[in-house]
Length: 109
Image 1 (cartoon, one colour):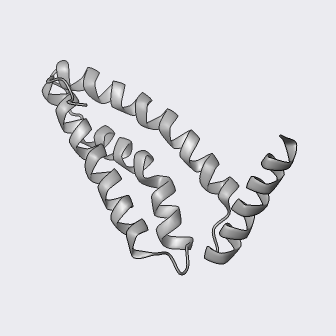
Image 2 (cartoon, rainbow, N blue to C red):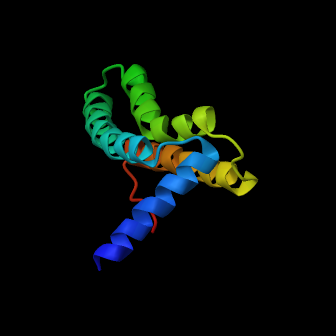
């Protein structure tokens, strides 16, 4: 079982070298950005329900959601087109989810 983890680690590092992206930095950005995203989203919903300004908080939530993908776009080299399509889909779905939560309607799926 250990050899599978070693193989996976080496494969990720080789893939990162091919595209000039550190997979551990990307993973760290991904995990920490989600903590900030959900914290800021909760704060946004609280401000929205209290009729307080929330657009700056919402912009920060979107920035924290998209931070790992921005790292991939800026630092990455030789990235396939389907990766950019996937990133656009993830960001669009994130924006849609935020919009649905702010409107108080349940998210389908």
